[in-house]
Length: 361
Image 1: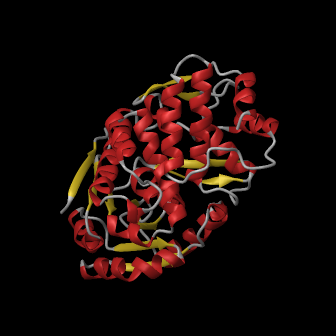
Image 2: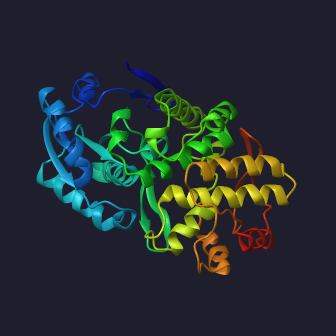
């Protein structure tokens, strides 16, 4: 059963298909892309799904090269991008060629950035294999790599030509990665979709795929993708509304970079960031304490941390916030909830309020 969600954009709209991985080649052929394809993955994902993906592409008439980058946020660097450029040159990728990202958010971001910058921009197709990739990072055209002093500071907007989500891929996902993805799902419930939030509350478990009903997984994928499609369709390049997708990410990114991207998964840091942002909203009189507690209960039910890692200096976090991409005129802008399903963006959060909330975490 294939479900399709369309991202409507002024330049080039595209579809997200929740479908079988074996449809990759035929669907790409119907987009009239060039014959040369570079499939980018990591060794673990390629072992599970690489052969199926390559066979699907070859049987649809594509000439396929593949390359594996190491797994992990700490490899999301310009050095890795250089390796992709070398492979692109070796295989004579042309302007009509396509890079296919088969993997999680790190592979998707790097492949997208390489495609955005090779020959000033070639096609990219996203095939996310993690929950976080499926509901968030593979959609919307944000690509990039990390700078040693901050996450995703180097990047470009480069929309995919197509996104293929095969829910079966989640069956090979480690439990910790599944939980990390649930952070982004909870985020959509808080910022955009109160009904999704209710569905998550009604589920007894959210911390392991095997305990979550297939109907809920389907709803999670459809509703999360639709939420992102709605927001990106209204604001492709983060001129305004799209900033709400960064809920929980402001403090989350600071925590990630201060722990060198080694201690926490991205979704774990976002969970901590949502707890902090929720409490900041309560302290500023924007949100009810009861709603903040409902949010935090979901974060805990998903098996995500709600406290800062031991030994993390609060002053270092406050200083790191100044490197956030959402800083404007030296002021950090926060996404804060006002009710379940509604948020506001504000630059009126004082450093004192931030310190107060973090000291309680």
